Amino acid sequence: MIVAGIGCCRGASAQDVEAALSAALNGAGTPTRAVDAIATSAAKANEAGIAEVARARGIKFIAVAQTELEAAAARGVTKSVRVFALTGVPSVAEAAALAAAGPEARLLVPRVTVGMATCALALSGETS
Image (cartoon, rainbow, N blue to C red):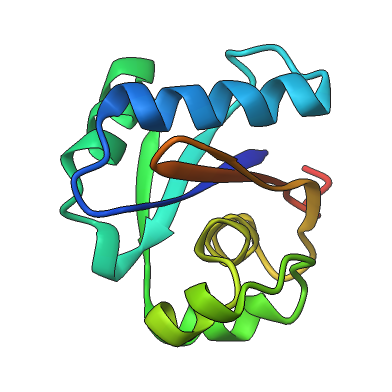
């Protein structure tokens, strides 16, 4: 299972989110339809642009609780001081992807930024 973690500025459009997701998928050499879910922080769950992309792609939308983001953040690679000050994790995109993909997940693509959105891809550690 591949999970796309999304972070964004308030009011980011679906086009911003889709552009960041496409950039991450291109970076992984992964087909654009390979994503199984989109995840973000519970604090961003009401961002229409993120939800719209999940809906348009027909994939699951996961809002990750702050405690789960914090637990997964240590497995990320991006360390943004500014994002940490705002959100309590160094990369919302990486933490959300890793948390939603499970405890054995690994990053396929660290956070990429396009416009007002960021995306990271995580691969679930599940073998089934």
